[in-house]
Length: 263
Image (cartoon, rainbow, N blue to C red):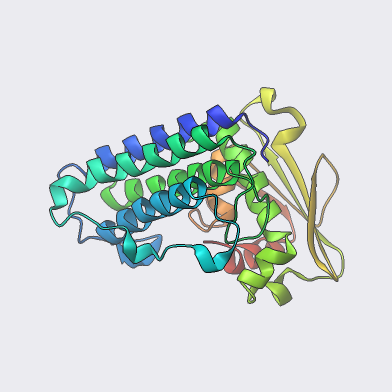
């Protein structure tokens, strides 16, 4: 279900929503988000607030079939920009309350078809909210940092999503790009010895797609950096030649990753 306790995900979701809400104060909500150029800041927040409520609704109703899900447009958004911060925080709270009430192991549908339990929604939304909080910080030129344990778990979660057959069915454009003939990518988080083996990842692109495991081994390309910087690099928020990263070996393999496997 996850590499961290469910309460860690719950606390992270609330914390990240609070931080994002704070960034909205006095911000121009019409400003384009540079790392999500199809959205302005208001659209980014609406996306997150509806996603939180969508997950809460799925968990509360114990949905197990995609035909039973509610459309995102059924979750109303406040007209007043000043109300958007509170609306965002309230939605995160709804999701936390729904999972706590149902139990993290309650069988529950999700759009990726992986980890079909209510706890999926806490983990997924904690990480999605974290990354979009950074997107918002970059938009308004505010400082940001990521906790090493949460960032490392975000890497593991994203790799697990990409390695899932159901997830590649959800995003068919991933299928061919994930396949390879044995190329390997090693990630090494440098910021916290307490991460141990969970702070290193070996990724393999094979004929059937992607697989990964924790551990330290020689690879075609190795990338070292803080766990938060590695996560954001994998998700296209930090360029591959950023000074916060050290890249050894086949840089093109790392660039291929960032080109195709972000959200």
